Length: 384
Image (cartoon, one colour):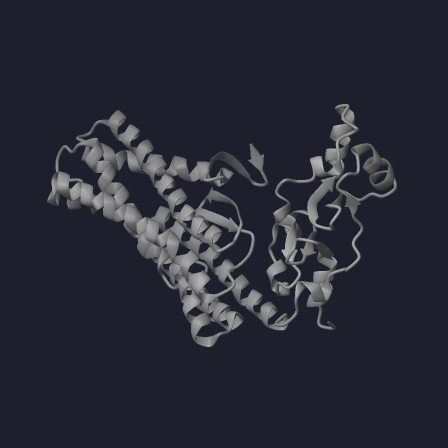
């Protein structure tokens, strides 16, 4: 199944795991690059080297999923909904419905991923040392002169080494790496100002990107084009994200004290949850070009969003008696937000990305208003 720009592979703990098209490119490059390494370590068997390379690549991406699951599960315990985990060109990304609300929450969520990676390193190392002692460490530093090795030991050593590198790299205090987010949580705690902490973490991220790009250029000039280009492209993406964080911090400062309730339209058009598909088609969608309409229960609680295509599908399949409640999206939490949330919490929400609107509810889940992209844009304008 393809959702958005990624292809769903499976679900773990109810969390969607997907991959982008770029992931397949990296998977192929990993296998191609590792085949020769394992062939040398395993005594020159090309077929065995290829099989172990495939296993190594798949295990590495499994460890990335576990890393992101660490972030995701801790975020869920903090009340942050996870919309999925995607693997892409440079690793993985746990997609959260909102940003963290406190320095402690930021620290816990950011540190969870590296903690999982460290556990993987320690477990692999413990098993390797117990099984083969010093030889395991020779393999872990890619020493191919140790003679014929077992496939299991070569695979275990490589997995420990690559996760150790991932652990160290992620802890670099450069936003948006995990280390940069941990650094932001510390600054946030010290300054009691999230925007200031984000800005300085973004600056460190930009500096880290420049350093990484410079290192990539050095490798390129030294005759190592593959790793050189990899570092340069990675630096570009990290630098862009860090610059975005600095811009976001400026926006957050301007919006300080402004809540969702301050800018919402308090009188959104809604339909009752008991409205039939036929009634919705006649009263709402035939008279307007709206792609969707919010649905409310009799007590005013937000029930979800009814989409035009869902109504058309129900009618074409001979189910005109279905109600709006039946067709409203089950994942309605993606489209809602607490009316007391700060306005910056709207930025990047699922509703804003996919619907162009977010529905403001009170503590009881009663729909109190709607915030559209245009309303947010006006709130961000200089005149506002």
